[in-house]
Image 1: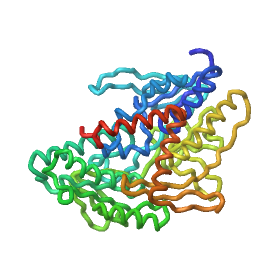
Image 2: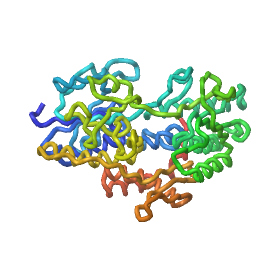
Image 3: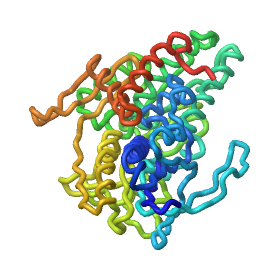
Image 4: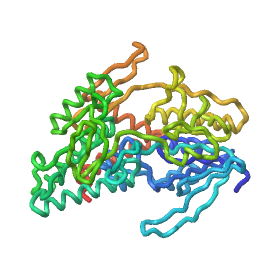
Length: 437
């Protein structure tokens, strides 16, 4: 303990890591000690987790080491998972950390804060549906995405070694949820299935043996996008051979497939759950802080929690009013977390100087969905026309790629991002197109 103001940021996702970096580069040198706590050692931008799951992105190469980022940007990183809070003494509780062999490497501990920022993101919401936890894969973090990819490759290797699939649905994948994650994952899995066959697993005939199915409860996939773009995206998925079932509510998941409310059974040896999110469960009983039905911490426009001025929350784990419309809150999008991180970097500097805090106003810049290398669709907000503009094809793809570059710029600056982009282009010439292990 240095005697300086202690800023603790819990959660190293898109928003949390950007905030730690900005604060470390400013107040971390002079006015405060900035500490980031996360249960993972490596950061991957969450919108890219479906790429990790498919194997088109290698987390061991493309991930950012928290310890390295902390050294470069004047903050501390501590490995651990927060599971409790004592507001009276301003301490958070951090659960023990175990290695892959189950041995405790860091014991349970408490960490003091003067200002606490919670950016713990979201996890999949299974809605209590029977069999989901037992039989589904989730893509909430890098570890889960890596686990899914390894299991997927193992299934392909096993089928190849047996001269082709020997069991019904052995290479069938059901994706529950037709939002951005589910649709993007389906397109990437189509690509990966063909690539694995091309890389020597030639006992598998993709068109015959591999089947990818999206199951969506709404009447169309991508319900947040205009209907025309949903139709375009579904048509592209159909061209790839992806089956789409809309208006189908999943009521149970078994080891060999999915049951829907209309009596359908969709066979699949692999089921991915991408049907909804909620904030982590531990927030629902966090020392009296106000939460909603999705465990999100209710915050004011300053992003301070309603019952404690020293505790801030933002991103997917926070319920912040959108500013108009009864009950409408800021949607759980990476662009919102980025906006809030930028504002909080200013807010906490003002807080240290005893100045009033700004109020957050959500700005919607649109939504984009990339169906692998095949297509990109979405909307961009046009301030001059006071509405949205639908975009597809090359323009949409370039804008989609720029979103990740903006995240990288917030972490590294323009010079290093340029070097990283060049290194990535060169790496593509010597590495396989997909991860094969």
